[in-house]
Structures are given as C-alpha cells and as structure tokens.
Length: 156
Image (cartoon, rainbow, N blue to C red; front, top):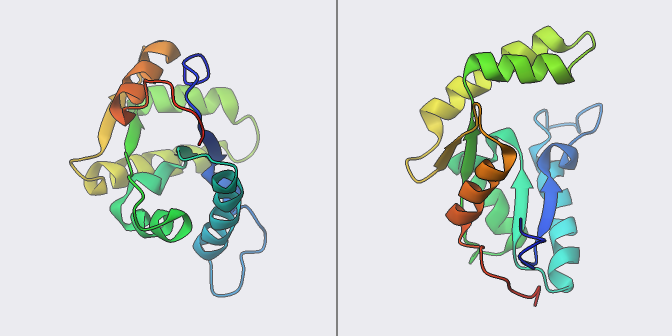
C-alpha cells in the first residue's frame, strides 16, 4: 500500500537485529546488540533521507521499548505502536503452518505467553488491529490509517 501511494519508508525486521548465538556476554536478551544494530541501520536510512520506519517485532510495542527508538533515531521520534492481534486458535493455526520442525511446541507456548504479556502491558495508546479472518489488504489499510502515512511524501 505504501509503495503504491509513493510513501517513502524503510522496513526493519526487529528479530534479525539481535539474532546471534551465543548471546553477547551481559546481554542475554540481545537488547544491546539489537539497539546497536538498529542505530547503525537507521543511520544509513536517515542519511539517504528516509524519515519513516516500519519496525516489526512482537514486543516492540511495549512502552519500555520506546527508549531504544529514541536513542537510535533521535529524541524527537514519533512512535505509533500497532499491535496485530489474533485469537489463540488463529495464532496456533498460523504457527502450525509455518513451524514445521522440532520447535513448534516451544513457539506455541511462547505465542500464548507473549499474547498475555501484550494484553497486560501494551498501553491504551497502542492501536490494536484484529487480524482473525480478515484479508491482508484490510489489515494494512487499518494500520496505514493509524500511522497517518496515507499521503505520498518523498523520502527527504
């Protein structure tokens, strides 16, 4: 949708920012390396004039994560937190279609645990978008509307 509307933006898959093994000493949750990588990658995008970032990561909507974005992108960053939600049954069905190996059970348990965590700790300002039984285009429209990015803008 954003490409079709000529809205300049960058996308970072947050899980990849800290995906190392073993975890750096003193950083068991890989948060420091993820922040360091986000800072470096965002600097490259910003140097080329990009001002909008879609950062995907399950827990990045939690308020305690805002500091990472402010440090990596600047204190004046405006954050719109969007949480895509699904019922446990839908999440289970999606995971079973994608996790074919030995980690399925661990992923299923983690999904339920994270869903409960997000239910409890995501702020009221977090835009929650239900995904059960909806086409991707409808979900995307709701997310784009929440960001206010529906109008074309140049990267600069």
